[in-house]
Image 1 (tube, rainbow, N blue to C red):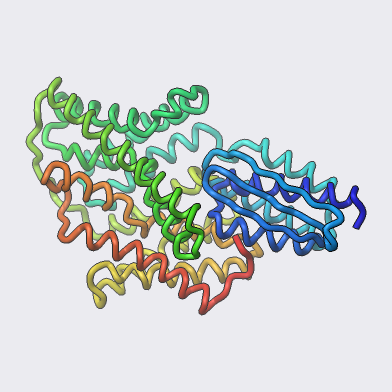
Image 2: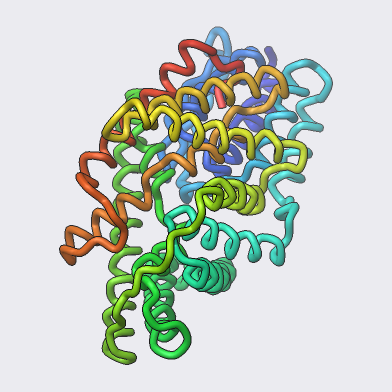
Length: 408
């Protein structure tokens, strides 16, 4: 291998690694995938990935050429469209259908690509996701409507955060703070007796770091200690910021508009639970930027995960039903990889959102701080811990029974 070819290869690997990090790929998957690509391209490499940095060490067969590169990066956000296109590009390169120069150019095009759904549809997805979550939590129809409305307000703050670094730094607490005040105003002037804490939680559910917390634990289980610890602590701090913003907003709202008396509404019919799962997953399609051809797979993954969990919960106590749901989801995602030749993450994330107990973590924090439960919950702390462990174990068992074809 001559020096010119080595330079082309290492430039491509560095750019590919940075893009996959940007799209929210977990560290243990990112490192494994880059190692596969480096091996196919005929170089030796070692990688260290954390949520805020990425280190590359690349060398040729006899160490004629060596290259070290360390980059400080911001934590990535999930982008299934870009992840899918990037994986297709890498596959085309490794099969000889694409040259390194063309692959580099295509990476630049993918990186500059906007969301395929646009701001209007994404905003509607925020409102739909928050309303669907409220429905899943057993809220009344008015509470579902107000949750969706406040979800749209949260999206406006998200758009602002793209333009302002200061807003981006305080996005979670300020969004929860505004949601708390608006929920109190709604209770005072428009709809007395609504469940304010539930509406506030539903309106910021997109920011609740349940998925990030799970990914941190998954990285720890794969012995990526630095990345797993950093991601877990980042998720915990994000949860604290959300709760503090909501607590401050509700307290300020009560001072301005007076405290409300919650009046429990009539329970929704059983079919509303399944409708909420469908609507939540549909909203996540736009939020995660899932490609149109993968939408049926994504919706199926959510229903498989939720139905397997609901069925097994009749026989397993204490949140262990989540183990069955995660196992079925993992097998389905790995089967998807073999059929569609795409990363399992594309469909697995939709199912995991239904399973991860991020909302229960928030509820447990509220119970600890105020001594009050705004939804019925017993032994919440123990259940959250068991659910997280069941999720990690279920996916590990699934990878043993039906091994994945791709590292990501």
